Image (cartoon, rainbow over all chains, first blue to last red; front, side):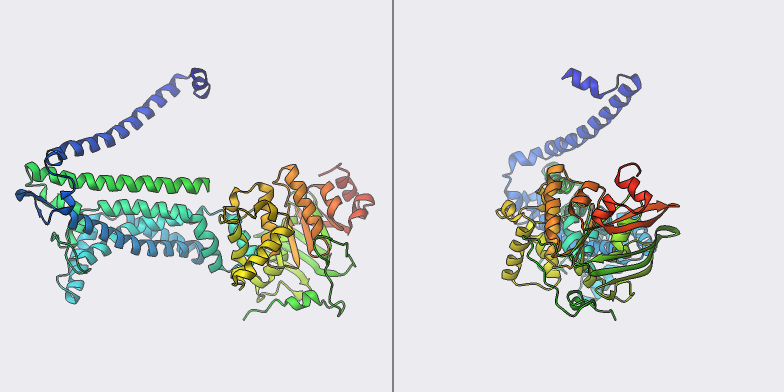
Length: 292
Length: 288
């Protein structure tokens, strides 16, 4: 074992120093993630120990001061707003990536890509502000009160669209040229090539991108808080105001104490769990693509 | 307004009015009544400002195997790709001269390229099955060209896979990924996929060079059996292979950094009594 290790690493001191530095950095990153999870567990322990876990889903309402810890409406709002945004951004993102790769002249797709990358850099609070001042009044004039699940979905869509579009574009770019030439040599049309060859070949990468975007959508706080109305309730239509788990933490953390505070940490724990799960599934899809 | 690529003229070429009878694949009779199917006149190909192939005039005979030999970079692949207009996909590629297949001008700008490529199919150096199941690889192009009935598709699937000698090997795993097959099997699958569209011409760009010797032998035997039923144009660097399977051979060489055709003739003549010194030196292994 020792012999094989030596054979792969050079004995030079500079090399040893760099290796040490890199492994220390990697260790630190891993330790931070672990510590965050441990911290969340520790902080939510008071309420997790006293309250039966299922009650977080079954309690009728969210009144932590009175011992009611129903997270279900907020969990539901989080999941539905993310799912809606993924549906919209997934469709738009993949379609625009296909446009870039297969239909647009090279100069147009270059500009489009730059634009999308720019969209990724806009701070979420700006999206929220825009949503609050533009989107909410428009929807309010149609179906009051305006601040609703729908506005949340639309703002989230804008925020995750660049992730989906850029990763789908990269995945399509990675489709081997020989597949495309092969399809052309069989007399296949462009649409047949896209649907039959390019998309199946890029599927793994595209799904990985959508899952990464899902992680972002689940965790987004500020923009959603600004446009969704923040009423704790099960939404019955797209026009009902909702409060997501993230918004709940942001809204109540300033004054929460005791079990209330611990219950907020429980919602943080749930969110972190969801995002970690997604990241793991995304990594799996990424791997499938490489072996594919 | 695209000009239809007419299958009819391929089967009833201008040279005679008689229908051409094609032998069954397995028996593979030598046909080679020397009757040109593809007539190339003064063909030049250039990429941007760089000429790749200059002034090639050549007839390719129906039902025969024509081998294109010569060193790398002398325009053989360019020549091959022009025959089914795959050069259209390369930005900046310019083609001059004339190519008629079965009497039709295939360089006409309004030609239906998809129909042409269905008739003039291409097999690449690196086997390129799509990342789909074995069944979907064969069926997808068929569906695209309008064959939708399950029974037709199944029948065709079995027939082409039998033709390339793959049926026995894969019939129990038709729905497994094609990329799990070995290199040689993948290449035979690609040939089956092309044969399923019932082309008249098969273009092959070094189809064996990415395969191990055993698989290469299997694919070579298969190509030999295509003789008579299909018109095959094959680029190969394996001179022994060209000699074994081809009826005609065309020798390309680089002159002033531009590919040119040096000599074309019956395979035996090219290898045994070459008319040109360059050809003699190349086939005897003295140059190139």
